[in-house]
Image (cartoon, rainbow, N blue to C red; front, top):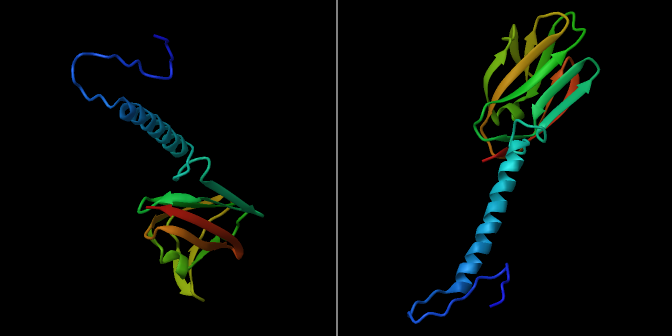
Length: 166
């Protein structure tokens, strides 16, 4: 018999057994495809396609203000939006549109705002501080899919977009 490394050697016996070797070979091919799929899924998760990683991280800088957030995230997992201010002598005002905040649960804000108010269909958070302020909003997504919004920091507008996985 010739040996071909891409096929199974068929042996003829006197026993009457239905082997269905073609089905077995097809099953092995499906198994190999499944293993590649699982490997690709683990690899994309490791680099951050589903949140908290290189692919998902977004950093926007405008003047002395930097906003960091994750573009992709998971439903009902706690995510962060970080706001960093340089050369801020009289504090900061950070505001979100109410339509954006309705899609999240605000779990906490660090440091706590000195004041928050609702005005012009936006929620404003006022912080007192000095140079080098860092503010972190911890949000929990309550909707799946694309969520588009904006954040204003001291009257500078930043567009933020998320895709929330189920």
